[in-house]
Image (tube, rainbow, N blue to C red; front, side):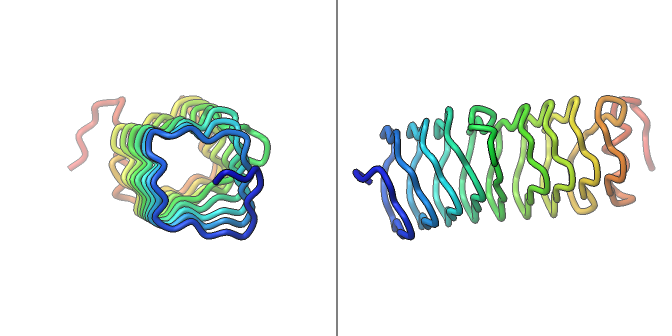
Length: 190
């Protein structure tokens, strides 16, 4: 990873835990079974990249660009995505563990969270319009002052969302999930 620009490369089983990588660009790259735990990847650019079965827990991404990035089967605990560069920020997650992450203030239109654990995640002041939370565990996650227009929560579970604090026009919920919209009222649903 010494080069400044990496294009169309595959990185297999790279271990960069506790390392600092800055000023690099990755275009159309694939990362398989890599360990980036506690690494500092601030001020880098990732475009059209895929991370498969990687550990990115506690990775620092301050000022990093994430443009069309897919995360599949990754462990991404405690990552503060709100520090990423906002321009063209687009990410999708499938079968990931994203617990304790933060997307506060991010514009994340049409983001897919599929079969992903999102426990205790902050979405405060995020724009998630048109996003998908498919079979996603949202236990303890915070949605406050969010734009949830057209978001599909129909198979999401363990969420607690206050409709009075969020824009929720055309958002979809299952009948079983409606209880997650009433938690603040302390209503028992039997």
